[in-house]
Structure formats: structure tokens, C-alpha cells
Length: 402
Image (tube, rainbow, N blue to C red):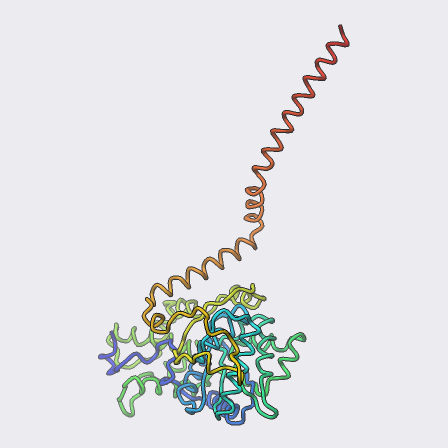
């Protein structure tokens, strides 16, 4: 709507974590250096935390776009419920076939794959985004994955990214063994006022704004934006986007503090903030240990599937070759919409079952339904017994009186 008005090729302040729009502040540069160092030194385990909207996912996407060709990435950014689901997702990301193996078999198979990668001079990286949602049991299982190593080198580099709650979890006593495995930790910081100015201009430039020497946002407008957002990039995007729209509607070529104040006063920013800020009750619920159910496998980046025969112990086949596997060409031709609907339907069923188990009223109702026929049957028998003995007692009394 406002692109032609401001001479832009595309929207500069979308909320999607597009790595081409990444502005590398001092804090972002430091975090990126941690990624690069960990990969080059095969350090094994790194944790990056930061508030919602500080750019963690955008940063890791930028890193993925620039990894060396000898690296393979398994990037998981959705909730995982079980160890088996985690390993299955890793297999999918690495392009490894799997069938009906147990969790133990999958872990052995993963070890063989990582060992083979290491011998071929390749590196394997597991990225866990939104890791604050992982249960304690899963975090402990990730520690086991970090144990897959040679004498002096890790077979698997693990990068965990999450909100500050992740750091709180890792500091708990029962996860101290996992904490000891972490080689590097870094907290991604919000932008300062100077970085906020540079951030706005950087994204405008990437989007095609070419008015050399003229800033689209005035100094006073930037101060208002910083005062409202405290330097959180996602919040900056929200208020900047609405300010451009307001400027277009009011035919204003330069965004001044009046435009920003008007956006704030009309609660546009608050409404958008609610849309992107996670519900705290849901976040806390996500921190609780999850039910051990098999996870949906969400493919974020399709890789060529590696045949099972490539992952065998020398001299013998590690797994049977006559497993029932859907041919790859059929998988590729599968209707994506239908697949997504089945996955969502399964998740809804799982949520419904969990809610039902947690609802005492529902449990009481199900118990009553289960035992109601039995109660009616025994009740009828009891009535017959009472009537029978009442008649006998009446007859006995009458005989005595006669």
C-alpha cells in the first residue's frame, strides 16, 4: 500500500525472521562470533538466550545461510514431546531413513551416522530454537546426545536458543550435568538508541529506500520509538510498520514524532504487541514435563534421503532391509494440504485427550458412564431381594397372629 509512496521495493519491517534484513549490532556480532568459534573448534555445546523479539531466530538463519559446505544442519524450531520424536526430527533434517525402530535403535543409528560424517571430514550441527519449551527429561536426553564424541572432538555440535527462561532451567540443580557440558553461553541484548537508528535505516535501505542524506524517520520519531520499544527489534518493526502506514494515510513523506505518538495513542502498538508476545500461562505450561507421545515430524528444509544400507556395521546389515517404507516418489507427490490437516488433527486429538485427563469433572463423568449399567443391574437385584424378604416377613407375622 505505502511502498510506491516511500519508494520501497518491499516491506522493510515484516515480523518474519528474514536473514537478509539482519542488522548486526555489537551484541548480534558477538553471538555470531560464538557460533563461528564453536563450529570451527568443534566446541560441542553453545547456548544463546534473549528476550522475545531480540532477533535470535533471524541470527541463526543468517548463520545457516553462510555455513561451510562440509556442514550439515538439523534445525528444529517447534515443540518436541519425546526423545524418539526428537531423534526422528533429526533424522528427517539430516535426510536419513527410519522406519519402526525403537528409541535405542534410533540412537545407535544416529551414532553410526555421525561417526561416518566425522570420518569423511564433515560436521553435523543440531540447532534447537525456542528451547525454553523443552521438558527437563528432554534436556537431559540432549545431554546424552552431546556425549556422542571421539577422543578429543564432538561428533555433534549443539546450538540451543531460547528465552531467559531457558537459562533459569539450566541453572536448576537436577540439570547440573547438562550445564557442565555447555562450553559457551551468551545473552543477546536489546539495541541502544544509536543502534535503533542504524537498525531502522539498515532495513529501509535493504527494502529499497534510496533518499541519500535524508532519513525517513526523524530524530524525534526514533527517540519515541526507542522509548516505546526499549530497543527490542520485533517491537521496533511493529511500531515502524504502523508509522509508515499512518504516514501514507496522512500523506506525510517523513515520519516525525507526531506520527509515532499518534500510532501509540491509538493503541495500535499495544494490539500488535499482544499478537506477538507469548501467553505466559502457555509458556509456563510448556515448561512442565510433557506426555511421552510420538511427535509430528515437521520438515523445515528437505534433504536427500540417505538409504539405510549406507548406515551399516561393517560385514552385516544393522536393520532389516524388508521394512515397509513408503517410496520417496510417493512421499514427494503426497498432497501437502492433506498431510498438514492430518498432523493438525492429531495434535488436536492429543491436546483434547490431555485436557480430558486433567479435568476432574470429565474423569468423574467418564467413571459414571462406565459403571452406570453395572449399578442399575445390581440395584434391580437388590430391589427384588428387599421385596422378597418383605413378603416373607409379612407372611410370617400373619401366621404368628393367627
